[in-house]
Image (tube, rainbow, N blue to C red; front, side, top):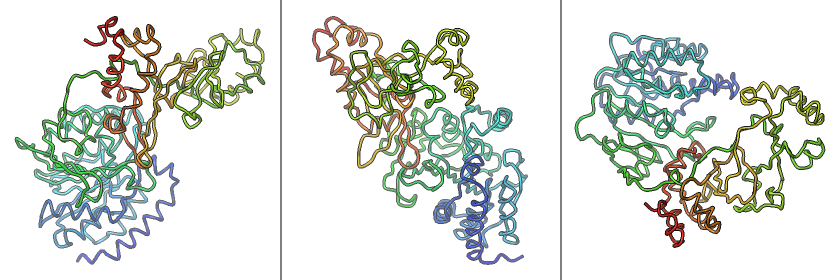
Length: 521
């Protein structure tokens, strides 16, 4: 059958996309990883593919076809007469049926099924254009992860972390579907560039194929209105990388006209822990200098499992007659802190509002019932709410005890946004005896720094000032960013930030340098 013009089909496709999206809640679509590619973006990438490939006979594959946004774009970019063959695979039966109906007689074969369970045909594909499902690892059952990992080990002899999302398996397993020199353009979350489970993807891109370009969209320019994720376009050919190969890294703006770009050598990429530092830099320097992890043990604040139950105000503690021996002061969230220095009241509690306390008791229930009946009554309230069966509580003995997080003199907020150039993170000097929950990272001085602070308490102010001088760029280089400009830093990432200013602040205290030379060796 002769292929007809697809403009009218594209209009119908967009209408069907809206209809199908409305059939699922946002939570359901998140579980399926269904985030529709805007037509303008799909067309931009298809035209970019045409400029790179220049093919006159296209064998098209989209392993997550949806309603066919990329196929529609490929028809427009390459021209219908150059579409030699096309296959789309779709797990969702509603989307598969819709795509089959829309593109019936237009050269697209729609296979209903799970791409990761399909076997590649004898004749492979020379163009992959796709936006794979962004299904996070916690939506994948353990048995499913084992199956995917086994297929990956068989196909590419690669191992991958159990924290990898489904899109990682799609990208890697698609290798066997491509013909040699075939071009692939993947629209995927940019998190693979930084996180530990992305190591396998980064290894694949630098060793198994010729990586041509990675374009990262500005985090505040969210490509999918219903997903809090920053996106990247990954472009490669199925061919071993040639000697001396460099990769084009671009950032912000459309891929055709990026705001920033640079060429980065494969050697540099293979050494780099994080790829989002490119194109801002093109080298990786391992100076061996001191970092925060050499001076502090950095831990996430404690996770209660139910803040609303375990963290109470001072008035609620009095009202329920909970003994003071079973509560410990805990800081409120950062938005409640009016300053970055927290002073202590005479009893060690923080001079903040609201004043909160954490329930933490290791006594057995029978003893609590006999000696502290009002506390026991409150525990029964928690049981009625099934808090004792929640994941964190059920893994503690007893369930109302807490993980140990003693007060830390310095804290750092765990995540934040950068508005109008503001710093997305805050350091806090905690001069109280309050602990903190998991919206903070807790910095405990270790080794010579700990000894120096104990011997010379006045150094706390100098260290705090030095921590505050850490720039947003240093955080962003080591941390990670999500759609909408939400920045996050994990303990191991904070530990990688250089500590030169902290060290210099302590060095200026000459007597400490003389008494504690280990700090300066």
